[in-house]
Image 1 (cartoon, rainbow, N blue to C red):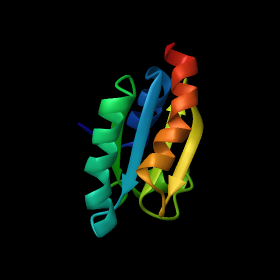
Image 2: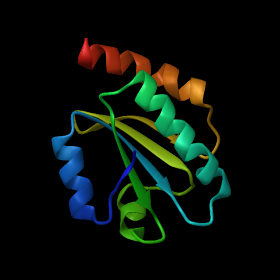
Image 3: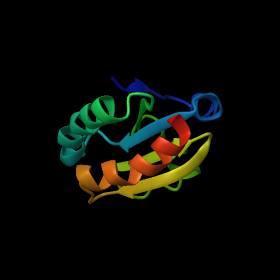
Length: 110
């Protein structure tokens, strides 16, 4: 479901080529992340099938945390045409995320 990004070059490549994507930033120690990640993936697959899903493990790729100003996990970035439209960190609900994605998704793909 989620494609793993390992390097800064991979990150820049997907941001530059994918029209719509969600990047899930997490660490191995984050227990909330382990529960939330599959729910986010399922919600996006069902409601927003054109958004590609990516995952960054910050333990393995700390430079991506620095480059993207990630200070808490989980953090989600939702990008359309290479621009960040939504960023959610730490405490957020799936309904809240879904409602925020709805408008830019409909504008892009309708």
